[in-house]
Length: 300
Image (cartoon, rainbow, N blue to C red):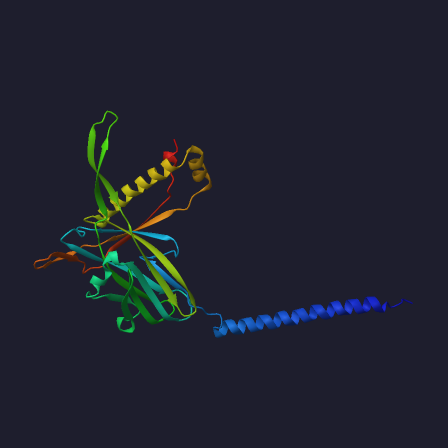
């Protein structure tokens, strides 16, 4: 007759009881999860800031090249718009969304407050509150949107002054045999400004823009200008690296870069006694160019 081992029996009984308890807990958790999922408890709003069809990356430089047949000079002013899209890509309504631009006063953003602004998309302009304020050397332009439903988008056209970003700096030098040389050094600048996107239940994120301008008569001509600048950028990167550093970047990769093109045909308006004002009444032409800042053709 077999002898029953009560110690082993108690052990296995405990194991079976534990497994049964875990199974019951798992089934209960799965049921609760499915109920919560069906009720929308896990629904979240997801906000994206976009230029054209591509989401912009926060906390990284966003390079924008504006092109127009005319840009501002000493007596004339050119004004374009930056068309940004706020999109709710989540499955829950986005509440109290705000987009705030921060400009240095050198942008003379306050002078553009008399202009009408536009907003299109799923959100009606009447539902948008717009504010402008100043503090120290900073101008703030804000758009407040009470509600953006799932899948809905709102496009904000923020007016921007288009400055001449090219400077001719005169300089003098002497050769080794003491011959005086004078010339102009061409310098291209980029103006920087920031925008913050925030909403209820969404962590605020910051976008860093770098604005440059070029005289262009079409989006294609602006693209050619951008390609020329990119080639200069490739040459600059190559000169900064020795052979092995550059080879390492080619083999192991380096992050691609992107430049956004915005082209506007501007209408002119004569301001008596003050000069010409150029501004846009039409939607701008948009394009993105992606490129790697290293190239095999520049290795040797």
